[in-house]
Length: 302
Image (cartoon, helix red, strand yellow):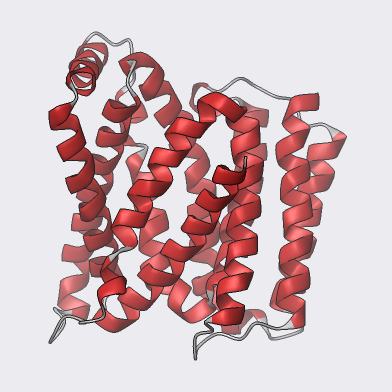
């Protein structure tokens, strides 16, 4: 559980790095593409050295061809790609705490919707009081964190909406990636497919951004701005390893806790000039955390 909390902190750290990387490059799509491509390179090297991973990939191809696995189950990496893209576009402006609040809100509300509808092949879980109340508390946390007053929301606008939608997209990613992993019998094969799809999506986004943003005049020389992809790989390795020990529920609680706690610490000790960590942000993050834990833990009791 402790390792899972640290993995959640890594998610917040990756958001900070990719957010500043996007600002330095002047192109969030390029920052996201570099980050995801790094992950793809690492997992490809792992795949080459692991026969089980290659066998799992062959199994997936056969399963899709025979109709045992729907094609859309293979595109879970698009959800991860969108999350990394929003890191490059908005985390550097919103600050990690507000960005993480948006992501966790999307994760929690998306999980309630997916579970209650039984979408993407997950077990249908009726919406009970604890999860519904938790979802409402999450929304209260957002209102507190943003210090919502008349006319204040336009200042946040699309920058908050992007990670909110990205958080919801991670629910789709987790649901279909789990299905792919079960069919392949290999976490490595499922992770490889995730990174391939995500890299293709981000390549398209980068090419679409070129007419407007163009290429950067120079590349940033700060070394740690290039480490976001490696941190993403570490997070995924921890996620795949720990989930079999603590379960999906324990992993979800730990990741959410680490993500929000880590984001507050990062904004406190290394604030961005474009962000401001206020008392309302901290209180809102804690309220959001309480609601998110109710949503996650409520799945066990339903």
